Image (cartoon, helix red, strand yellow):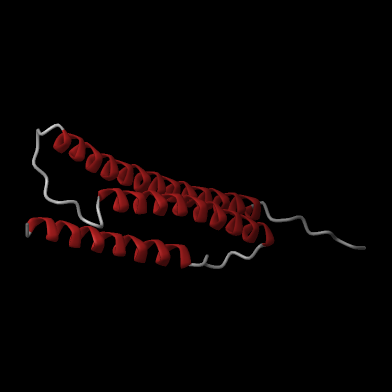
Length: 135
């Protein structure tokens, strides 16, 4: 007589928890990407606003620099866009891994890439601000 073992009721619950955690992680990355894009947009638009004020003579601005707020703002918007795209790809890979039963740690490449890029953009912003204080 063959006895078929029923799947443990714990396994579907644990799988559901893993999927929910994966979704929460993806949504956190999406929020981060949206925040980066909004911050970049604000930086770029503020620089444009200052140039408009200078054009009408309300504010005196130093000579334009080669690396300005438009470039840094655009870099942050691009970084936010990449965060959203990579987060979606990471979510899909993790979802398929959960379905296969391979629940090891996901790759940390996304975290490293965005962290290093954010650090480099921050460094560029620091240099730009330091140069503007020297004038």
